Length: 173
Image 1 (cartoon, one colour):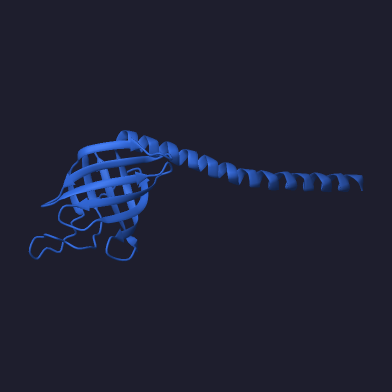
Image 2: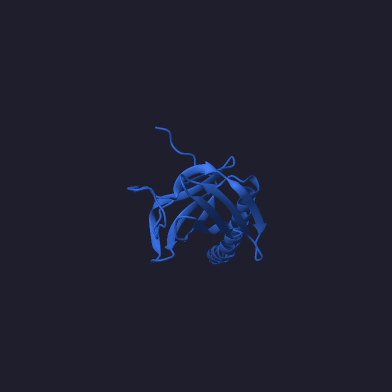
C-alpha cells in the first residue's frame, strides 16, 4: 500500500513539474525565436543580400489588398530583382503596355542603411526600370517584419507589407 501511495505521489510530482516546465518553455521558446529572428535580420542587412516577401499591397488611391500569390523583391550583388504587382495612376506609360512597372531587374543606386529609432533598420535605394526611376524605402523591424514604400517618377506612390527573409533558391526544372 505504501508503495502505491509513494508511486502515485511520484507520478503526480513528475506531471506537475512537466506542466510547469511547459509554461516556462513556451515563453523561452518565444524569446529564443525572437532572438534568432533579430540576429538573422541583422546578418541579412549587413550582408546586403536579402529577400522581401510581400503579403499585402496598399495602393495610395485604393483599398488594401492581401496578396495570395508570392511577390517579392530580391537584393543581391548590388542588383534588385523586383517582382511586385502595381495598382494606381500612371502619369506616363508606353502605349499599349500591360506589364507591371514593378517587375524588373536593375542595378541599385544610392544604397543607404540607417538604424531605426526603436530598433530595426531603414534601407533606401533607387533603381531604373525601362523608362522610370523607382525609389525603394524599406522600414524593417528588428525581427524582420517590414514595410516597403515605392516612389516613381511616372506613377502614383504605393506601399507593401511583408517580411525580410534569406533569399530562396529557385528550383531548376
